Length: 208
Image (cartoon, rainbow, N blue to C red; front, side):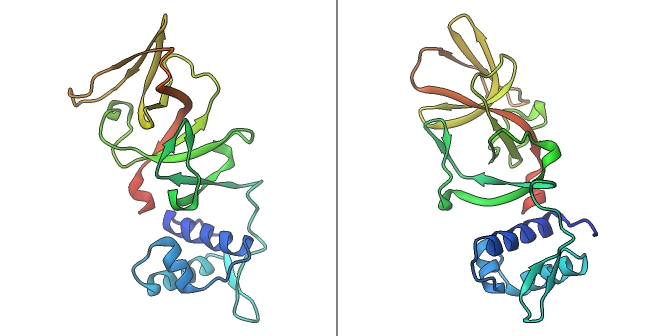
């Protein structure tokens, strides 16, 4: 089968979500779920995906997944892109999930928990993490010094390099913008929680 573009992957994944959840699959439903302005755009995208062999219409004109497609357990996992985290945990309520992004299982550990956040500002641009990028995050029990982490300070998430020296925690930016300064905290401070580490970043404009 011909490779799907990023936008086609998102449409294909949403079609799979509708079918797997037993929901009625219509052009209008896909349009609403994906935030497209025109049903024509969805229709054209579906035709392109069908032409590439990933979808087909059965004898009743219902959209179906091609039998040639491999299941998630062999090829991809759907990782949610979320709006917010609180109390150290991502908020997976439906209203906080912007979309789900199919990621090759070769990039993931099968036993780990992942989600995406959208990077804001430019505090880590020297680590090739730009504002607007989609940042893949993995759960960890104990971050290693020198790792890039998502730290939650008073329920506000920040992406920084983590360093621990004695009882002090340093959250260090890597930016061309000198306004970003290290944050120094006490390890015992109950207002800080670090349970997620950075895996890699993807250009956000690939998913718009």
